Length: 181
Image (cartoon, rainbow, N blue to C red):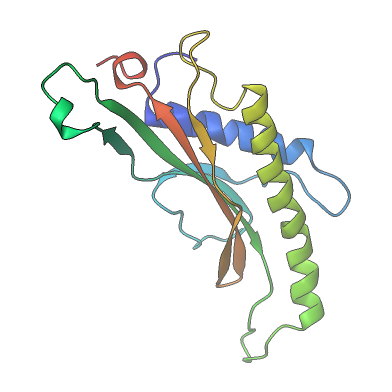
């Protein structure tokens, strides 16, 4: 992978999440939605077709740790690591209250939710498999391990006929090497 920036990281994760969903597609569990995008922060659910796969660039964090303060100034190295948080969001459609104010039936909600349950599980397991195989975020320098952490599969509550899942992925960025600073 060439020098990294947040857009390249997000695009790579979107491709890998799409691959994971498409590889796990089967009857009753569709592959990746046709609408795919990268955004800053959580994606909006205000669109005509609610099926969507998005990768959001969330706040990045620089972690630093120093040992015993009495060692500072005597050449003790500080451990620092910069992590980018990327969030994969999978949204699907569910029935909602109609114009007459009637709630959808339990059967209709269940029928719409069931494929999303499968898709969420396929996406989460697929991301873990890609991480274990070294494909998800390969090291920027061969032989150099990159810290990649995949969070839990987290439900997104229904919002206006859409609901789904998100998974946060933390990826280590070597500021000097990856970003060319």
